[in-house]
Image (cartoon, rainbow, N blue to C red; front, side, top):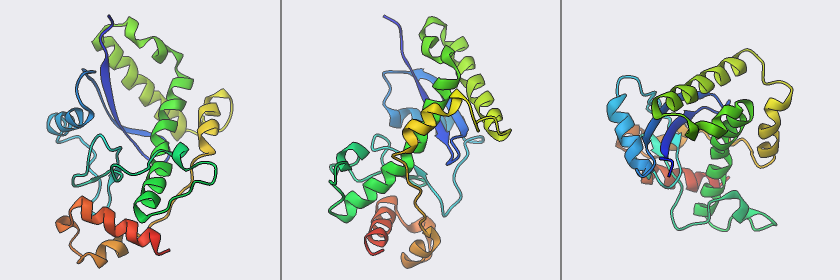
Length: 202
């Protein structure tokens, strides 16, 4: 049996990889991998600014700087297809959260489409595999930074996934001002509720 390992990545809205932690055992929970990365790379981890946050899936849960969807509520985009649109503020939040979080899936889709070697990673040792992954992400970013993603087969994954993605503009500082203008004192569950109410009242 080939051992598996986790790849934790932070992706920006341009599908660039801005942080990667690769090589943790595949049996570890996603939340544990994130916590270990925050400790091991505490001086290098790109924490979001105080009034910003990363969108994460439900496996990570909410914590300062990381905002997940509502649990036990419809989330994945396929749950909202065929006219089955959000009915509650929690579903609306999850719907828009999922639309934005598709960027992560798009980034990995583009990466695998560019670098076919990633499909045979298990054939290599852990150290070599980690180096290959990080190198592919670095080259992926270089290509994006230099306009190389504007044509050719490399963008196929982006085009396929892009139909389900809609940009959402949200004036977070204004919403946080409603919470008392003390961003660091607003827990992420409360912040999520504030954002959800703001979305529902648009």
